[in-house]
Image (tube, rainbow, N blue to C red; front, top):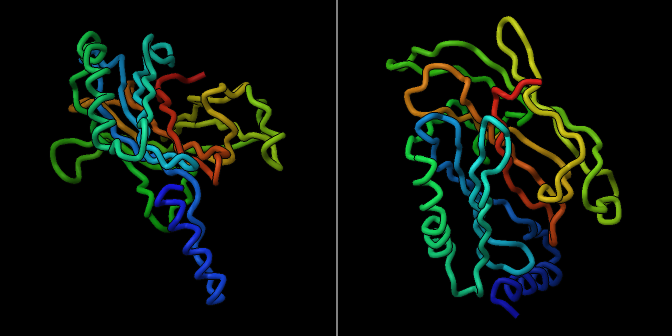
Length: 246
């Protein structure tokens, strides 16, 4: 038995003896780091990483998205999981980045990404279904344009048998981008891909743009996907190009 599982059992036992309520230690909330854009703005790279529920092992997933096709680049995602609890998350991330470096170099992904707007995990009084942003200039108050992202959820058909796992249907999402003159759908799920698992809910996480870009044709939204996991909801991410209106 791992130390992590032993501590969970011990905490539950103490709570039972003392009659105390202890927060559930379950689920897996991945973090993310955006690696940047290609020089022509076509490719967007980011990694997600965390400690898997159930196994307690570190994992890293590295994605490169072709923003023109809204598809993963051939050879990605790169998935790695630690062999045992002795292999740290820090060490595993270094291995994955080394493995991805040749593909990053081939695609000339060396332009930093700037954050236009971000909903941090500890932000209060924000619903996670709307996010306003603009394009920054060179002075603190110089922001051009005003855009609003809105997220809608609905029952969706999934590649997996989600109804066998959950009491409800798997959830898909649609993302709308609105400015002062128009609104357009930049993403709407049909059948959910197998990689998405069995989502139970979504939240808007943030919006990114290539460094020094002055308009949003290469903007990307990261969406938090909370899917049914081994011990609780598992958070992963999906990148949505904001130019992919349909």
